[in-house]
Amino acid sequence: MARPQMLKLPEVLDEIGMSRAAFYRMRARGQAPRLVKLPNGHLRVLRGDLDDWLSRLDVPAY
Image (tube, rainbow, N blue to C red):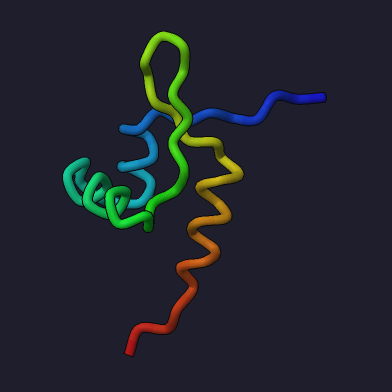
């Protein structure tokens, strides 16, 4: 079974086109994808969590 892909925070920010500060503001409001903290202290986002989060943002912009 393949391990889930873990993205570094800069990769996530680049993919969603958001600054680190904006991401952390969303995270503080509970509106960002879940972060995983590795034993070495680095942060990662699981590809599945990011994809699920993006799919929930599918709201029409008028």
